[in-house]
Image (cartoon, rainbow, N blue to C red; front, side, top):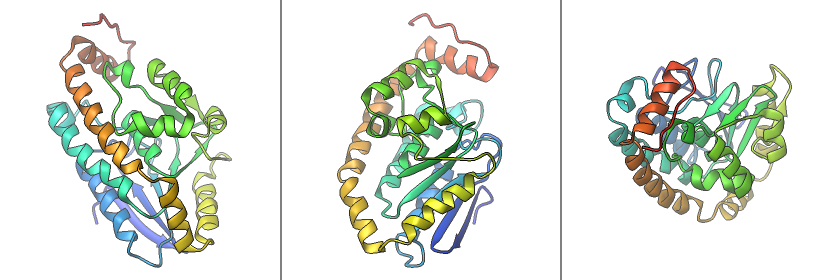
Length: 255
């Protein structure tokens, strides 16, 4: 077991906890471990639901453009990441994301890959791609409008604004809103409700509801990466990423 992902099972519910606090940035290796663990539970009759959670202040801030493989080569790192990320949509076990702090960029994409999201009022969901100067990724082109509708998705993607927990609940981006300090408990309560249902029926119903989703996400990932390759070569993208790392407003010129 890697130190950056802990895995446990209790009462028919598996907990996958990312441990890269405070931002829980991911890369291909971490996403791959999540995928492998989740797909392993598809063959475990003692596991009926998966909770995806994270240690520390934030759920996930996506890729780390300030260090590691994404800083060195955006394109190669994204190509490798997206190949593994696509496999999340092949998982047959229901997944609940317990989202504290911020789910931003690819972290929002990871949360949207789950069947359900549990949040707190203080949680923030941020599709900040345009504020970084490039096209959205991680399948968000499909998953976000699927969850909140096209207009709400366009609002989030074009403005890059923060959506708080209460608004997320109204948009159905969050399925449950936990009281402060009760995020994991609320996620476990939802998981227990699902786990109490007939497991064969749950997987069959879920497969029907998600029919074609994996294929659409794979097609979207190809398109997203093609657009990102173009944008990562622009001055605006360099400015957006630099401004984000410096915690200042970006100044875009359309170049």
